[in-house]
Structure formats: structure tokens, C-alpha cells
Length: 123
Image 1 (cartoon, rainbow, N blue to C red):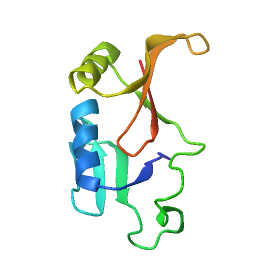
Image 2 (image 1 turned 30 degrees about the vertical axis):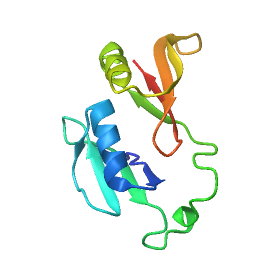
Image 3 (image 1 turned 90 degrees about the vertical axis):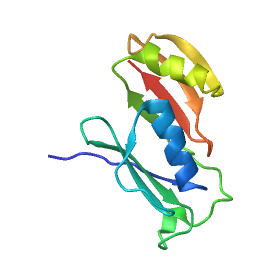
Image 4 (image 1 turned 120 degrees about the vertical axis):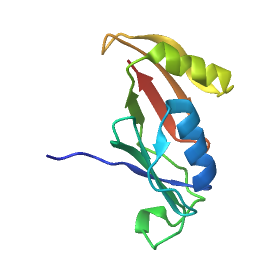
């Protein structure tokens, strides 16, 4: 089996962890100042958060560069309406409201997280 566990560099691991937990109903599987693993209800790791310039990783050293260039964090959810309602309840700034993606035939919306990463949420 091969599975991707995406790690993104963030300014504040605890704050970003709470943001993703509140928005996507994920839970902490690690916790800490410099690294976090966020999992779904089945204990599958969905996203990892890593503090900028910790542990000497070459692509996570310079927080002054534009984050997310060439990257879309694409989340498939089982209840798009529920996730959208959480986004509005949390007053998250969105890039696009729920709409039909003509290419995929799926409903989706998009927003940015606390560090500026572009998220696409699709049914």
C-alpha cells in the first residue's frame, strides 16, 4: 500500500492544529510545539503540520517565501454542506462559495488556511 501524508510548514502548530480540527473535524494524533499529526474518525492521518525552521528540513527553512506555490490541499469530505456550515460558523474567509466544478461534476468550495495555503473542499 502507498499513501501520501502531506506535511505543511506553519507558523504556529498549535493554532493551525486547532483551526483544522475545528474546520474539518479532525483530531490530534501527536500534538506539540513543532509537529502535529491530524487524523480523521478512522485514525487515518490526513495532514501533518510542521513548524517552520525546525529539524533542519531544507524545504521548511524560510518562512518569508510565498507558501503553497504550486500546491492545492484537496480535501474530499462526506458531507460538504456540514463542512461549509462549519466554515461559515467559524467565519472563515473563503475564496469561492460552494459551486459545481464542471470538470469533476462535484460540488466544492475553496478557502485559505491561517498560513495562506489554498484548500479545495469537495464532495
